[in-house]
Image (cartoon, rainbow, N blue to C red):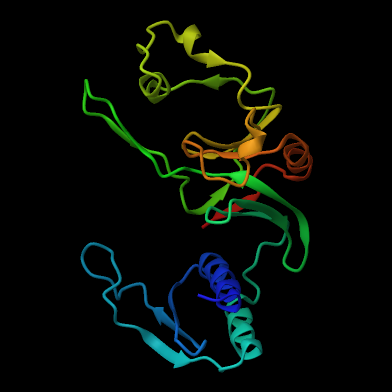
Length: 225
C-alpha cells in the first residue's frame, strides 16, 4: 500500500466510524478505490457481514474524486468539538478538529503480546482496543492498581493485601480513562514512545500529556484504529 492509499484508508476508517454505517473499502492495484455499503440486515445470524453489498459503485479514479465521495458520506456527521485519534500502527496520538491538528505526538500502544499463567491457565493478550470511545474520567497524580498479570509477568506471587498492588510512579502526572480499565497516561519509559510496548493503555510523554489533559474535556470522543 503506497502513501496515498494509506492516507485515504485512514480517512475512510474515520468516515466509517463517524457515519455509523458499515462499509467495505477496496484498493485496486492501479490505486483506485471501491466503496461498498452493507445494510444493517445484510449480516448472517452471527452479526457478521454476509458480503452482500448494496449501492456498490466505483468512486472517481482521481484522489480528489475519492476524497469528495468520502466527504459526502461524512457530511454533517463529524464531531462538533475536538476529538482524539490514536493510530496503533504508527503509535501516534492526535488531537484534532474537522480541519486542523491541535496536537500530535508519539505514543505507545499495546504490544500484542500474550501471557499465560501456568498455574491457572489464565491468558491475557495485551492489545489496545480499536473502535470509538469517550473520555470517561480524568485523574491527577494517578496511582496504578497492579492487576494479577503484572505480578505473574514478573514471576511474583499475587498479593492478598490490596495495598501491595498500588504504585504511584508509573502513570505520570495525569490519566484519562476511556473505558474498561484503559487509560491515556504518562510513563517513566519515554524513550520507548513510538513503539508498541504497553499492556493496552496508551502512554504519552509528560509535556504532551499535560497539554492533552488541559484541552480535552470529559466526553471527548476517541477514535482508535
